[in-house]
Length: 57
Image 1 (cartoon, one colour):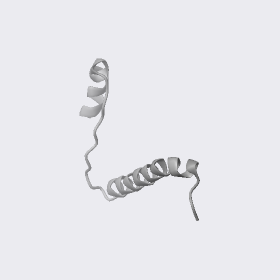
Image 2 (cartoon, rainbow, N blue to C red):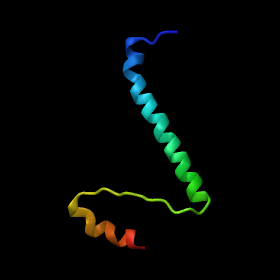
Image 3 (tube, rainbow, N blue to C red):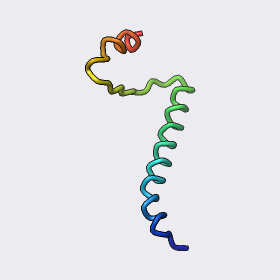
């Protein structure tokens, strides 16, 4: 079997999606088991005063 040109262009995206799905599955497993995990939240500086109270709780 040989990939088409479109398939070769899509392959990196597909691999990234599978890796992200694996990461999400591991995160769900950790949360279900009650293990803490690190979460990084990125936001523009103008919204930190809105988000900060929620993160603190």
